[in-house]
Image (cartoon, rainbow, N blue to C red; front, side, top):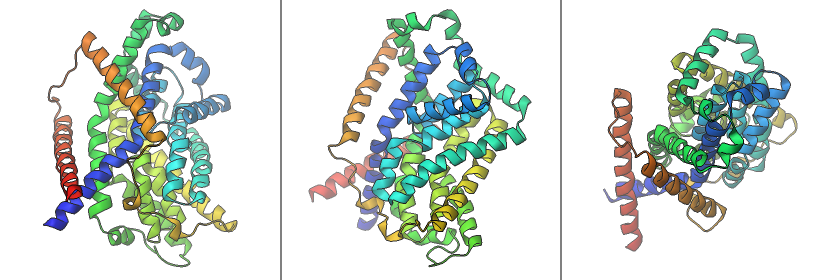
Length: 403
């Protein structure tokens, strides 16, 4: 029993630590999303990113790199871009870039894995975008895209039509009050998925034995795995990621666990790239665009991430750059809570979030009622249970620490 309580406390601390690592990225992504929704007009977005030409795709990629969002926040920003009139390919390029071509993700990868994974993350991000572009051009379902855009526009609302001059709006208290309201609404939309996701991440990292993941990846631990084994691992990578329920910042420690147990470079990269095919992301996409469009995007991402992982593995192998598995660090070896840039950024976004919450509460109030839809009710219940799990685990950790 004591051992279980100790593991419970470790899982809770791991969940809290992973969320602490990613919180500022959440805040930054939601702030950018809120500002786009309030200040950027559909006409301007259509003019700059309204087609699937090289310029629009390049702009989407650059904007994604600049935004540096976690997957949950990037989804919201992508919806805003798409609803404002950006083409599907530039919007998806933004989504892929903002979750793969990001500085903070590279830093986390360098902490838990080897430098080769950092290089592969950025090279792979470009490959993902190029392959996605080609695949969407080959399969483009125009009617499905338009229905998805209409649904996204309904979610965005029509605020911009009331105040077309964004220069005056951005300099006014009313404009930033709208940003505060949107920011809080974005958190309200996904907080359940986020708390459940990070709770599950801590549980998996602590309670699920490494042998379980090793069994999933055929040929893991082999000195010279066959190509078919590498290909299978690249396919299993997103399957394993799907059931971890977590995004890009949270799956890096688990990727280190997999790699330290012999999973191939391709399998690890496919796992890392899979932050946009986990179940909470699929559910959010369905909320934004409908299940058919969410399924289409899921299929596109699955194909391109497996293909990119294989290309990277073969390329690094040909250059003699495949890393040594012993370089991986376990998630349990990491100290999450310390004085560093993460703490500074988190404190900034904690203050910003509290300020926006108070601002919205004073102007419009905060709805905290139980959701009506059965799916939302289930998630709400699981989120409350997650809070209970984390609360008891953290309390147990404090008691154990005192002893």
